[in-house]
Length: 316
Image 1: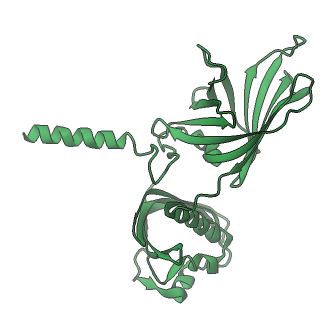
Image 2: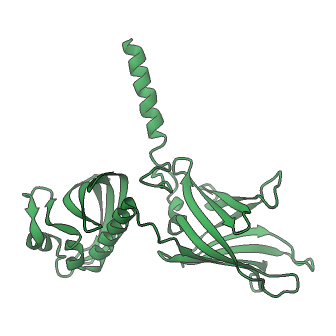
């Protein structure tokens, strides 16, 4: 009996560990797996759902009227790959499964479509460029027989959305003929409680990086408390402002919080996960750090504010 119980526990724990980065209520688009190649975050700015306008070139070379569609991105295979799917106003679907192959240092993208089903999925190759654009290629001759590529580019990627263009280019990429353009805006109508907590988490990181300590402190309740390493509990606006004020000559270059779980019970919620960041010291040295955290939130006038905030570092 003991052996059976141990085996069941092992299988359950193993199964859970295989899905830590899969889609969940807390992370509806999944998470990047830290064991995946670091390029898994190339598409990080696209993860989520956008409302888009798609425009294609007609046979007479003029542009057709825009078509409404949604474009949704998520991490799949327990955070080891990326999948995207478009749904147009007429109900037609298309999408891709994207994997980064470390041996070739390239993304390989397999495209599929409900409009043009195929027994073999076309494959695109490419990578993220230094300017932040993601560029993919597939061999394709021009109508006149000239050798070249069909090139796909994601650009102007931000928290507000992104743009995409499909164009034929010659081998030198000096001859460029666009045939398809898409403009996407992030879906910002998520006013659910979890959505508000996630939005406030992002705002906390932004305020910290901007040095906007007033905005940061106002994200706590009036009696909010923090539990720093090796210090007594600090409470109230004055204590929090004193603690979070960034020393002169120091810059917070990067700060990110990644929730593992957000659970809500009435007007109280808890949230735990990991944080990471990078600081530029007075002597101009970059110092990276990371850790784990637990936050208790309280709902105040339809907003969620931090009541208890505890964290500590994790060794790399």
